[in-house]
Image 1 (cartoon, helix red, strand yellow):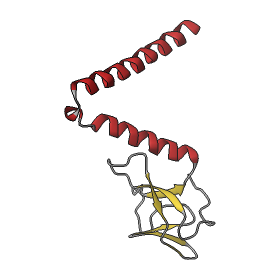
Image 2 (cartoon, helix red, strand yellow; image 1 turned 90 degrees about the vertical axis):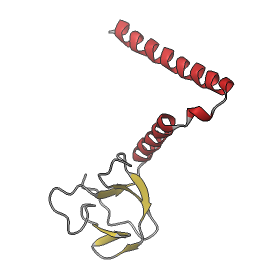
Image 3 (cartoon, helix red, strand yellow; image 1 turned 135 degrees about the vertical axis):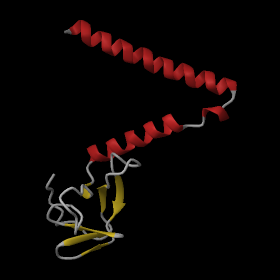
Image 4 (cartoon, helix red, strand yellow; image 1 turned 60 degrees about the horizontal axis):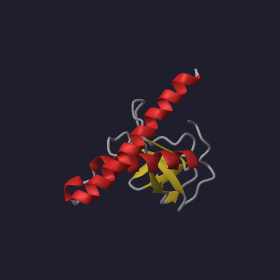
Length: 122
């Protein structure tokens, strides 16, 4: 992990991994303030040297990382999965339910084709 965070300044975006269940893929936060050795993302202070929280013990995994396209893509995918899984389908009309079901079945059929295509290619 040990990324160089020394070039970051107030207003820059970073990915915060806080070890919680709500955002297991991390979440994008903004740096509020910088000192010579630390980055402050209110209310927490992180070390520029390694991105870990100041005054943490060795079991503490709360840290920040640079915002990379790969990390942003993982965050977006996790949010989309959460949205789909927790959508209130009961609020849909019968026609909307059928359209959603048809769409999901097409994805499932495509997934099965992909799996069988890989097995036959081996």
